[in-house]
Each structure stands twice: as C-alpha cells, then as structure tokens.
Length: 104
Ligand code: SF4
Ligand code: F3S
Image (cartoon, rainbow, N blue to C red; front, side, top):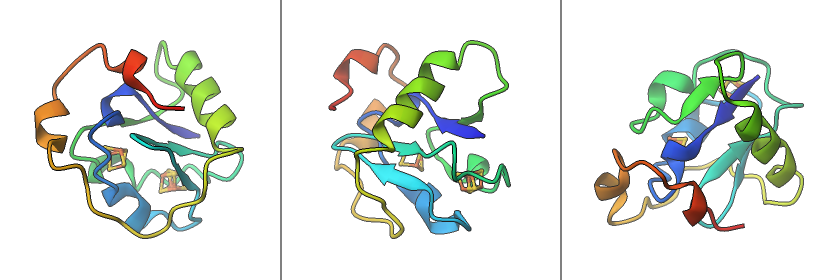
C-alpha cells in the first residue's frame, strides 16, 4: 500500500484524490490519509503530490504512518474531488516536525 505521511500536514494540496482509481483517500482537517485496505498499489498518486507526502509503505520508518492512515481512514470522510488548498500551503511545504500539528 501507499501511505500519506507528515509532509501532507497543513499542505493538503489534494491533487492526489483526482487520480486515485479506487477513491481511497479520506479527509481530515489538515491532512488526508489513504485506506490501506482499499489502495491497489497503482502508484499514480505518488508523483502528483507537490509536497512529496505519498510514499510506498515498504520504505523504512513508515510503520507509524501506516498506523495513522489505517486508523483515520476508518473515521474520516471519503474525498474524491480536489477542494481548495490552504492559502499558506506553500509555506508549510518544506517544514519538518509537523506531526504534532496533525488535527484528529
Ligand atoms: Fe489510490 Fe493508487 Fe495512490 Fe493507492 S497508490 S492511493 S490506489 S492512486
Ligand atoms: Fe496531501 Fe499531497 Fe494529497 S499534500 S492532500 S498527499 S497531494
């Protein structure tokens, strides 16, 4: 599966949802997650993200993000159409240490 990681927080560009063939993105206040049980591993969303937030969960150190994607995709609403990205999305793009800002 692919997972959405920290870089999405407060950026939330939503370009990813437009290309997913199985509509498996779910929307939180300031980030999206992928439902790992629905993702078919096609990989088309990965290059679409301007923040490079989407990664295959086979990369090192992503266990925590796999858990976060699994957990929140159970309760957050499905999103299939790109909405308006945050005004300051570009300011957050290269910031690190955003994890604590994740709105549940
Ligand atoms: Fe959707 Fe494919 Fe991305 Fe999985 S890898 S979330 S199926 S676009
Ligand atoms: Fe987030 Fe990138 Fe999608 S910033 S909303 S994963 S396009």
